[in-house]
Length: 239
Image 1 (spheres, rainbow, N blue to C red):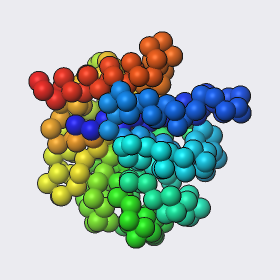
Image 2: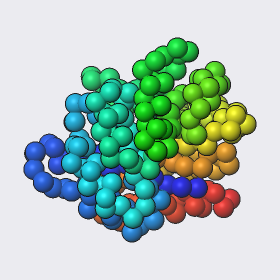
Image 3: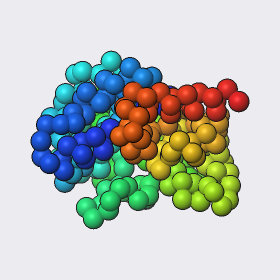
Image 4: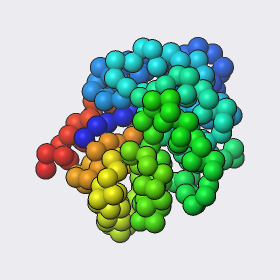
């Protein structure tokens, strides 16, 4: 299973003082050394953490691959099309939210998302859609002819201590997506405590994890934080 490390919140800390440290590019290099298969960043319209210059620097410095999360805003799609990351993951984006609150609401005839998918694909970028683990939404994603989806694991992250219903829903959704020919990724709210049951779902091939890794890097250092998450994911896969 691939582990992509989201370094948005390294930039959050930097932007709290509007200075030049900590450096997301340096954090990405450290994560790669510790076993990350790729680096994820979200270029938001309000530029609350990752900046355009970060994306450009990462695109040219990574030894692995860049997964750029973005909304379907034409300005951000244009930037992605110029930078050409390996993968672009389209996500919903609301100005007032603290973090992404749910998956894309894919509606038939939604020209905004369809146009973004087409422009990114035409630029040679692998496109993924961040969606809820819902069968109908997965079917709409397949109709857009994207190669991959990322399942929003927020419900699981909120309820895993009380019930395994959300985990079972993830497994069903992942199996359905694979049957539709989609590569399946997952992420949101995954931590050192709850990651292994999701990592053990065989139909999921990639996890995106950020906040928990960056938070624990305060205590352990970035390299050790990534290494520990890498080990948990690998152990779950072997079980």
